[in-house]
Image (cartoon, rainbow, N blue to C red; front, side):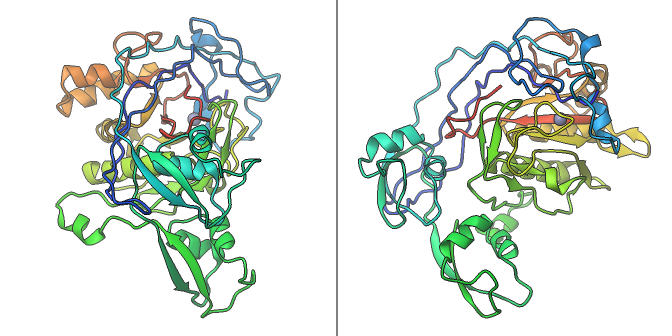
Length: 418
Ligand SMILES: [Zn+2]
């Protein structure tokens, strides 16, 4: 019991990131970039032994699978520990899409290093890899260190709008964390930018903030049905695979009227995953007009790693969401809108749902007007729980919640897809 399962995967789809036009220095057209397709053959989920990356085997034994539904009980946290059935559950890996991805156009830009910024921060900002940054820049410190104020040459795939350096005044009751959250930056970065400011500051103190400009809210609001924009701090990265890796710079899901966090201390994700989750849930909220907020289970701990009773949930890319209800029943109409909203992001690897529940989802999707083609792409049912079809995949015990796995951020070459 108490497992979250992890399966082999491929990530064939291309990820179109919006790329506004101006760089830090040079004005340039941003282009979209597809994700490289990585297709490991399949990775076992371990039930509790701290021996991740369990053996790869074909086939699936439903009886051996654990029940992840227990995650929704106020559990003892010991589920899935060694000795209670160490299970390896492996779905055959989906067949990777053989089509070559179109190569995105690139633009040379100069990046001025901001205090506290890491190579991975910069790489993700421009859709490149750390290895590439090192190749292009002899001045990348001998031991890989970066110096604030120096510039790096970047052959960028993505060109985000320039970051602005602004001064903000501390108000009464402000904390480092509150100010960081208000500006969509990490607290540790805010501190790094303001080394000369004492840890306990006074109201009226001015702090330096490097902000990523947000999309014009008024313009967004003027468009009917437009989704809200989320300013998610950068710097949260998956390192390794969902059931063996960790999370660097974890970004916490913010408080929201759209959902309730069951355990905020376990609600950390990658910057990319948090953005995908927020946007997808906003899309769901707009389209389903639910009476109740969603209930969010675990994502990852701040630094990722083992999060009992799950075997995955280690890199900030996995999130459990309780299926919406009407009264005591699952609201399949709303559940389909939720699933559809995540799929619409184009950034989801899998949505795990017990096969026994997929028929209901399938029916609701049909009733909502999904075409055969959409149904085929979205849901494994009715082709059998062992088949490599659809984004919605069987994982035993996922009967009252879905488990969404978000793709690796495109630029992060340290993230293993799985
Ligand atoms: Zn899960």
